[in-house]
Each structure stands twice: as structure tokens, then as C-alpha cells.
Amino acid sequence: MFVKLTPGSYWPPDDEPSIGASKMRLCMANGKRAIFHRWDQQSKVIEPSPLRNGPAGGIIRCNVGIVEFEDGSVASVPEKSIAFFDTEKIIIKLEREYSKWQDKSGDLD
Image (cartoon, rainbow, N blue to C red):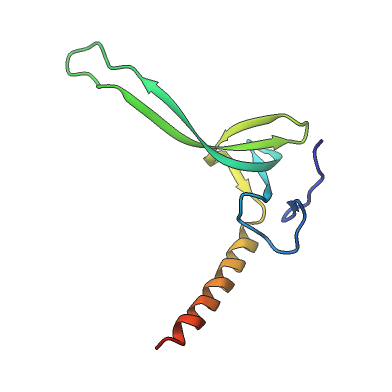
């Protein structure tokens, strides 16, 4: 079941934005509304080239986001194709936390 979320809202609901793994974030993935669940990594093995002095082969890794679309389907989406709606709120929260930390560390002087 897809939970109707508005930009900046979370599931489960909470008053404060959270970056923790327990919070899912509303996002746009491949141009469609989705709920972001978590980051993952995909790997692909590249075979060595049969040509002399060709590439030795190896592993290519890329980061992907696991997202759930409104129709209930789940997909892994390249990180460049995901845009979050709540980034500004999280930046403001982190700046507040950093200011509190600076105030506390200033007391040590």
C-alpha cells in the first residue's frame, strides 16, 4: 500500500526531519513521485580484454537508491536520477545542530 505523502513528510510521521534509516523520504525518481527506502550498491564484473595490452578487466560499482513508486512497484534507481523534496529542511536542521555543537565547544576555551 502506498502512503500518501506531501513534500517534506515522512513515514512513519514525525515532527522533525530525520536522516536515520528508520525514515523514508519523499522524492522524484526517474521523473516520478516515489518513496526513498535506502541506498544500495550494484556491481558488474568486466571480463579482461582478449587483445594484447587491452584492459585487464575488473569490477564496476555504482550507487543506487531503492525506491517505491505510487503503483507499489519497487526499483533500484541511479543516484543521479533521484531528487529529494526535503533537502532544505535537513540542511537547516544540520546547521542548527552544528551551531549548538560550536556553542558547546566554545565553552571549553
